[in-house]
Length: 304
Image (cartoon, rainbow, N blue to C red; front, side, top):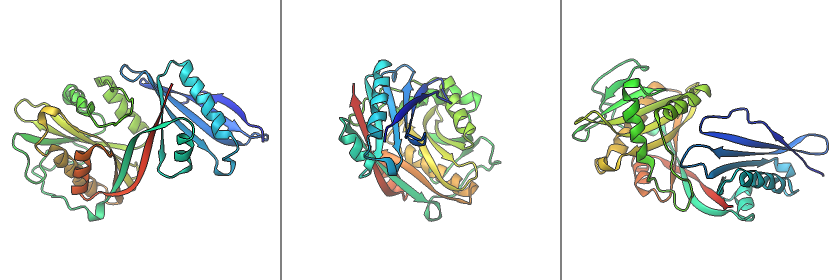
């Protein structure tokens, strides 16, 4: 079988990244594989490309994956990228493919799931408000000097600056040997990220811990729920600023996010979280809240 590789245009470029796309087809023009190379464009990550490569199971071991990989690597080099990242579940064909083609394993992620029916979190709330409102809440016994606040979708204007500043809580997240760079956030990027989730038809829910001494945001946790409120929700970022760590804020915020999800989405089955094995603190938080491991994924890196 001869393979034809055709480059395609990226249907969804964004302010922070764009993609190079290739489609592999057989002699009859039937698609047999694809490669998406995401090129990060913002300061701090403009050395990086991220690869997603898929080959139809029936067409594997025929050179399709290798042809697509060669195109993607050449594309990354032409764009002046320093490294290419790719991810594969442990023990899968993708895992073996990457390891055999010069990629090195740089990070292990453990995925875990919390069945909402089994979740045991305090449901005591000091204030009640409509589901769409921005509300201050308290779950259990709050750490002294802090309160919780939450909102749906885009951050309220009056919190935009302090919420953006709190994003640096993720800067020292354990990434082992991954050359991931530093994500530089501004208000525009925060709002664009929320809009991208809404455009997919999903719901973004954010819980933050507020420092009562000055009203600034000390930490945050984000949860994305399918638009129909069914299936599983996905935790995005959770972080606490270094100067506010040691007070149990991460667990407090996550417990509130769980409580809200269970209360507002009765048909939601569970919540998913992925955590680097080196992030022992967040793994302990998840374990304490009842999350149970489901599988492991490896992050691979090809240095160019």
